[in-house]
Length: 197
Image 1 (cartoon, rainbow, N blue to C red):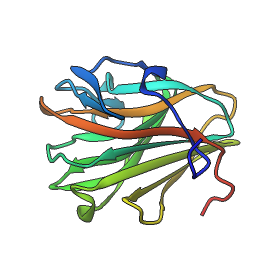
Image 2: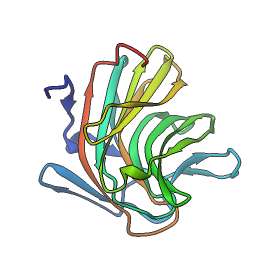
Image 3: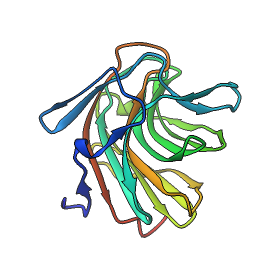
Image 4: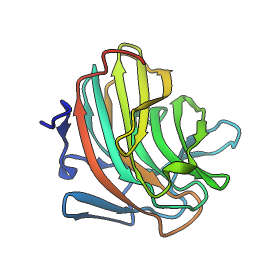
């Protein structure tokens, strides 16, 4: 159990939804190389369905929270990493940092049949360590994120079906290029957040 009340999840506890080009442990970290063209999206605006993002998932009971920490060291268009809560191919949330329009953007995609997307630019996060946290309780998921040891900021409060079992864990994908490597530092779970803000 960590000092913050969260329990580390070993990388070996997860199962890949779609295998990356490479995944290897480097001391306590996990280095993941994404496959070119990997992504997660359903329909909205673009018209396509992608379900081959590299998500390393394990069952997450509710109410519960999951946290993933990674180094933000990429700048390819739509390169992304963070965490996924997955209830199935049409019911999932991905949250983290995506490089878009020349800057890193913190945000989330919520998919309940169809995907949506919300982002906010965080250019000051480049080259630093990011932690994304998703807390599931009742019919909602609360997503927060922070850089280094700064306070968490609210990213998203979204609906999520209360009766759907989920798997959760770290993910990355590279929709437009080969060669994205993400260093994941930590995967942990613990109690759901007691408050929304």
